[in-house]
Image (cartoon, rainbow, N blue to C red):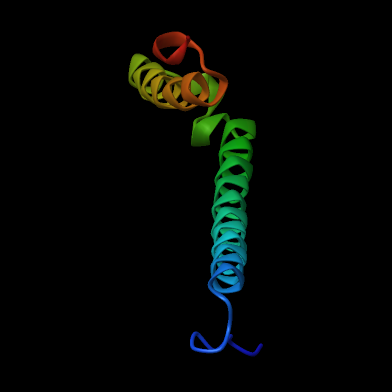
Length: 89
């Protein structure tokens, strides 16, 4: 891609090009972060499907505490994402 010459290019065109590049960069970073989240969600779903690596016949209160901790962290995320709980309007 050819960069615009700041000496010969009108200022409004330079600003528009900078805005376009900035928007493209933001989209690329957003897409990368979304892919990271999708991977984390897939891993969590697989772990949940496997009872979080615990044999259901051997569940104890320590396992319950671990899941309560995971649930509280996920609740913070979902509350923020869906504007619920402390993030409600």
